[in-house]
Image (cartoon, rainbow, N blue to C red; front, side):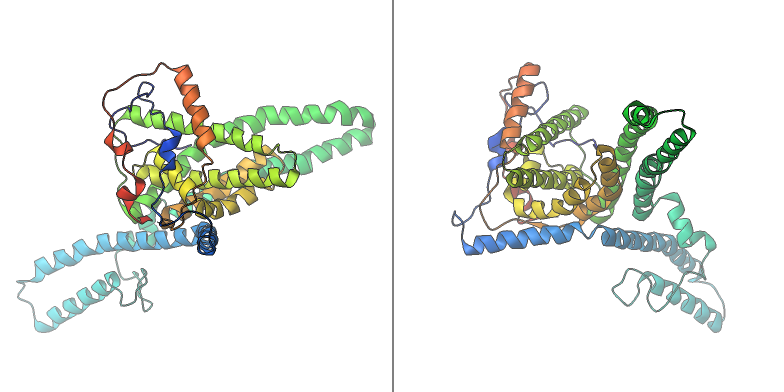
Length: 414
C-alpha cells in the first residue's frame, strides 16, 4: 500500500482529529444527465465504456516501452544541447578557413538531426545512431543512473515470481516428493503416519520459517517498488505530483483508505456467501474488479491531489469502465488456489496495470446510473472511526468538499 493523502486544508465538521470522515453522500455526486433510466443508448454507452476499460488495462507493457523510449530520447537531448550551444559560442568569431567552418556546420547539423528527427517517433530516424558521440553519453550510460520502468518492472517480477513463487514450487513439487519417496522407500515411517502428520509438519515448518517471513518482506518491498513505478510514470507523462497539504493529512488519508479497502474486502467475502452460487461468485467478481481498478488508479489520483471520496466517486459513477479495467487482474489473481501464490501473481503483474492506469484517459460518462457499491463500506468505516476516536467539531467547512469532480477536472481525467 502506498502512502496516499487527500488534499484537505482543514478537518470537516464531524471529523476525528484530522481524520476526514467521508460521508456516503459525498460519493454520490453525479454528473448531470438529461434523463434517468435505462435506454438502449445508455446500455450501448455502458458496454462501450466496459470494453474501453478492458482494452486500456492491457496496454501496460506497451506504455512501459514507449515511456522508456521517450525518456531516453529526452535524456539524450539534454546531454547534446549544451555541447551544441557551447560550440557555437566558441566558434562564432573564430578566424578559420571556410571549409573548416563548413565542416563544423555540417557536424552541428548532424547532431541537431539526432535531437529533431524528421519522423514522429521518439527514436532517431533514418538509422541514425549516437555512435559518433562521446561514449559517456551512450544510452547505456544514460540509463545507468536512473533505472527504467522496464527495469523496475522486471525486478519486481523476478523477486516475486523467479525467487518467491519458484521457491514454493520447488519445495512442493520437488523437495517434498523426494523426502516422501525416501521415507517410504526406507520403510522407517509407515505410509499412514507420513500422510497424517509428517508431511503436514514439514509443510508447516517451511511455511513458518520461509514463506511467512518472505511474504511479509515482499509486502514492504513491493509497496516501495509500486510507488516508485507509479511516481516515475506520472512524473514523465504529467509532470511533478501535487504536494500534499501536511503530513497529518497524508497519514489520515492513508489510514482511512486502508480501513475502507479492508471493509470492502469483508463486504466482498460477505456477498460471495449468497446461497445461489453463480450469483454469489458474480457479485464477488464485480467487487474484486472495482477494488483492483481502485488499487491501480489510486496512485495516479493521489499524485493529482484527489481526496478519497472523489476517488470512490469516480469508480461509482463510471463503474462499467472500471469494471472492465479491473477484470483482467481479478481473473488472473483468482486462478491460483493458494493465497500466497495469488499474492505473488498479483505483485508480478500489478506494475503493468499501474502504468496502464497512469496513461489511461477516463472520459466522464454520459449515462447517469451510478453504482453505490461503496456506500455500505463508507457507513461502516465512518461508524468505526467515530466510535474509536473522539469527534472534533470544527465551525469551518472545507470548500473543496462541496465542489463536484466535474468542476475540477472537466470531461476528462488525465
